[in-house]
Length: 123
Image (cartoon, rainbow, N blue to C red; front, side):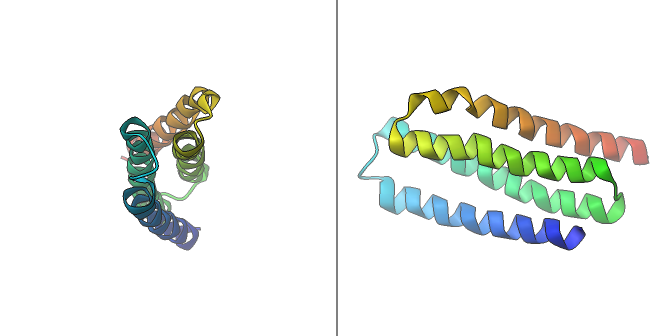
């Protein structure tokens, strides 16, 4: 399972680089400044939580169990829902997507909370 989390982290970090470059070079002339900022927010949180998956991989190697795995899946869900909704919102203008963005944020917060619980239980 550790290798899977490392692989997921690496893939999602690479995707974050690609999306960041796409935003900087492919969208700068096509989006308003506000929508470009929305896209960049998605990239920022995408990166933070893709890097967080490396922490999940490390935690899984040290304290294997369902809570660590749940934290990883919450980060993945958070990236898909939070960042994904911001990506689509910024390029499409579909405003109702903004209503689901906080669900992704809650997934991210819950993932960090689970990692904290795992660490505190182990000490």
